Image: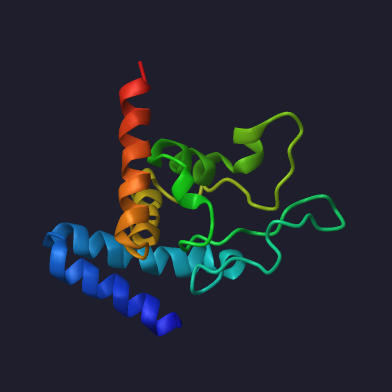
Length: 141
């Protein structure tokens, strides 16, 4: 399965994306494997029972593949979650095992990771997330 997701992402990158975007997706895959895969899975599958709270009250790491909810969020929110961590975004005492990566990754690196994740989604999910991102951009002052 891991090789299928990677092959799909590479095929997509090499067939429809400009050269610069192809290298961003490949860089995003590398950065994902280095910084995210240990919790969110090598194949973006997340931790098992990711919707069920652990004994400490926190949720396991969700998948970033099409079975998860990552695609429900616009790009701006995804970038913010990775930069500051979910607890900073949700607020109200929410706790998460995911730290913010603003001192580890640049905005361009985070964007490359997000682009890699999106490159693995089916077209309909990518289109839905893109629409959410566009609507969010238009709503910003």
